[in-house]
Image (tube, rainbow, N blue to C red; front, side):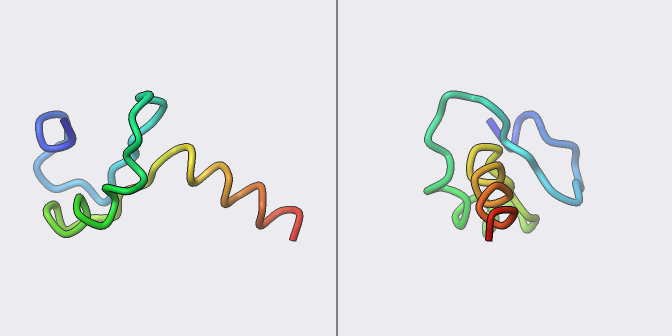
Length: 53
């Protein structure tokens, strides 16, 4: 899905609210596509934890 929907040379790709468990696939997707992949759920949790310290 990432390869089909992304532009030819994106700076990064955000996978948002897909109801898929994509977080475990981030390393593989980054290696294949050569760009940063951001899982919206993991990013939200990271931001919340960083905010509360």
